[in-house]
Each structure stands twice: as structure tokens, then as C-alpha cells.
Image (tube, rainbow, N blue to C red):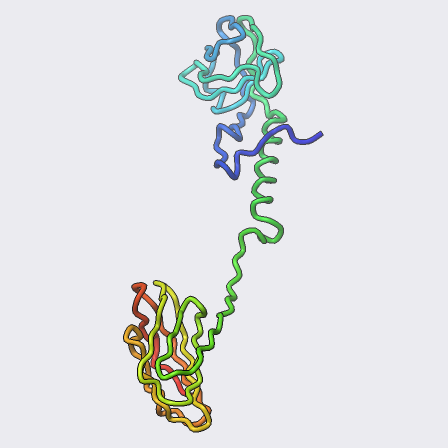
Length: 230
């Protein structure tokens, strides 16, 4: 038979009203007869019950939401599949640990486990990110489109007299890889919104110039280091 209880999680957080508070040897009696619809009633000693809790009167299980002195209030009658009924004066009120306590806790645990997944597979985020490399065809006026890759790569076969970086995003890191051809020493004029770029014309034949930039404002790329030639 499946668990009859339904977990509050993940659509809500389980509270004491969901899980209930158990009372050790909670036992008292009602001081006056009660009918089958009353949602509050008096007991001889209200200190015996830690609310919210479940109590049993005769064969009926009652959810007790709160208490005030010797009065149990905010009650839900006929709880956990029992039937609401009348009870006579001095009927015993017993705070047992019911099947509901175990079943509700089991339902919450299963809901949490399903949310997490085996070995936390549902919440673990891979820390390994593979950058996309965008190769830009050489021209004297190349355009570096930052939506096409976090690595912008170009091989210089001549001098770049002006260049443009477009579609930058705040928080984005962009690495430029400037490769000299077999002749080397070609120059590159960095885009006006790329700040702190190194002089690449010092690189010899087939050498690579690498430098990483960070976009802080959605427009400008700021150098995060001095760059290197390898």
C-alpha cells in the first residue's frame, strides 16, 4: 500500500503543522462533552500537549493547531481517516505517535531525495566550461562578434588598421588570440571599446598573442592582465 501522505516539499517548506510535534505521555481528559463539529474544547491539563499535535479521543484522531491554557483550539476533526464523533465528559485525550507522523516524515524525505537526485545529480553544476572559439577571417578592418565565441581568434597576414568588437555582454570574459603569420610583426589597432590591449607587432613569425578582457558595463572590454606573447 503506498504512503497515503503527501509531502509539502518542494512546493512549500514543511512546518510543525505539517510534521506535527510529538508529546511524551500526553494524557488528559475533556472537561465537558463535545459534539462532532467543535473546533475547540477544554481539557483538564493543557500543558500535557505540545501543539501543533495529534490527539486521540475514543477512536477519533484530532489535529490540534494551537492551545490557550487548558483549551485546545484550531482543531481539525476526523483527522487521518478517522471519523468525527461526539465524546462524553472525562473522555481521555491521548497524544500518541501515530502512523501519520512516520508517513509524513517519510513523504518529506522522499520528496527531498527526488529533488536532489542520486548523488545530487539534480543540483550539481559542472564547474568545467568549454569556451567557444570564433575564428575571424583576416582583413584590415575585422569585426569581432562576441556572441559567436568567448575566444576571438585571428591570424594576421598584414596590418590591422582598425577593428570593431560588437555584442559585448556585462560579465562576459573574452580572450583574444592574435596569431602572426610566417612573416610576423604585423600590427593591430584594437577596437575602441577594448581597453588595455597589448602591442602585437612585437610578436615574431608564427607567434601567438593572448590577452583576456572582462566586460563590466555591457560595452567596454577591460584587460584583466598584461597579456602574453608565446
